[in-house]
Length: 346
Length: 254
Ligand SMILES: Nc1ncnc2c1ncn2[C@@H]1O[C@H](COP(=O)(O)OP(=O)(O)OP(=O)(O)O)[C@@H](O)[C@H]1O
Ligand SMILES: [Mg+2]
Image (tube, rainbow over all chains, first blue to last red; front, side, top):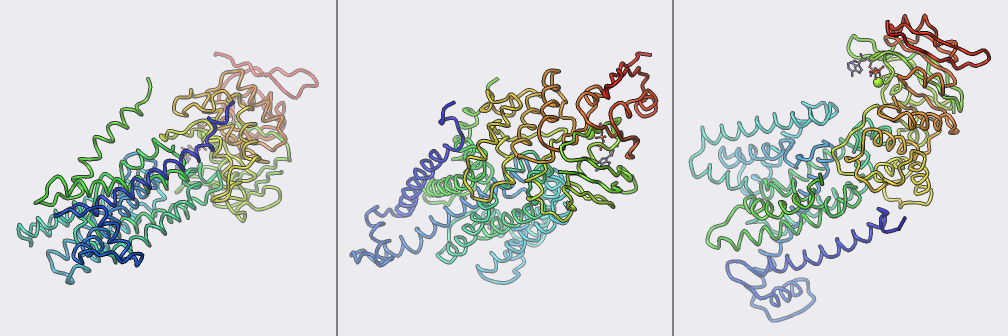
């Protein structure tokens, strides 16, 4: 019996993995900040940032410094946080619903957000950019509340909860289509569609600050509850027999995912694929236990999203490709490799 | 630790599933729970382990009403082996057994020597040490059952509830597991279908029929020809040797 096959020594592997991922992330963020409509050298990027942080006083063209700091860096960091948040949500829901296909939007949050957003875009409820986010946020929470109601606070079993989520998604998607087709014009319909597929255009520092608070808070809660999440492996009743206060933990974690998803969706749209696939990829590397899975999901999701954002700006320079399209285009080949390598040996 | 149930009632909607069950299990005793399919064995075990709330009645473990004991504190003393437990997650045998330490660990505490010792001992008890790195999904039915028993043992409980723990097990492991449960220094309540195994390993046996307690006592007092005919609807010969409280049952084909 060697120490090497004991799981606890996986801590070293996790640390290595997290360290490498963080380095990759810093690099990815730097690249994301450097490229765009016109490219800025990495050195200028670095000096712009240190200038803004008051560490250096290098002589940089103010326009470049402003582009780096105000437009691109905030955008890259929001992308990283959104990716991290969606991946964590996916991991939590896959564990709680005991379903490998669960992802942040199974509980109808994105459909609700779209209805809220449509109300703002098409019906003109409220005004301005803030109210679009608020509308989406309110819609997301309305959908979540409906699911909670339909599934008795998710106490009636995972499949029941998923069905409630499907019902809510259908309802809110129908409402969205109804509003768009009856009162919208073609341009508005396009706006809505575009918004739904996700975009990091227009995010600024205040978005980053809000998201940073939400994601950090959620990640902390999830890490504190990681052991309890592990106990759900064999179902709710089994978790209870391992001493987990099932009702409380489940409610808390569903609320965390709803808050995080709603915040992200209302900021950058419903970006698919990340929340479904990153947890599986992370599990492949660090195993299924959540104390390791959570941080791994956070960094992998962050890197993935920043890279997707870079790709979305590189593949079509004149047009903006919705980020949700890119996450799938980039993610599927990568995921195919993992699926292939992790296939059951029969 | 003793387990005392008083007038337990449980049901869903208008259907009564457990009706007015009272029983007392002494510390260290092994109590067998037998009864036909659907007689309420699993339901009663869940009530006793505090996984379901009775509609009325109460359960005391070690003199304390379990409804007032926090879930985690209870799980440090009480383990439960489910009748069927399954997962789609790709966990290893060792991961599963390690879950048994959950009630003893706080949110971020490390893996202690005591945790490791409990897991190693538990794996050894069920003969699964050699397979500790194998994926749970790839185990045979009996191996899964043994891993679940190991997980319950890793909880280092003082009371253990086992719902048909010998399901899927070969005869060697059926006897080994029940012998181990009997010899361990803990109170155990075991739902069993094999009446001869119940007779061999239990100090006392409780018979459930349609949710009610039909009989309770030593194997030779409970396992009678009449009881087998009335409750289990089988014809059987029960042979006892003088001075031995453990009868042997031979079922008759016609
Ligand atoms: N949640 C429930 N809703 C409706 N009926 C239930 C519920 N739980 C149990 N029952 C019913 O209660 C009866 C007792 O079930 P239980 O699982 O306790 O039986 P059992 O004695 O363990 O049977 P088996 O030997 O087959 O394991 C069964 O008829 C079952 O259908
Ligand atoms: Mg049963």
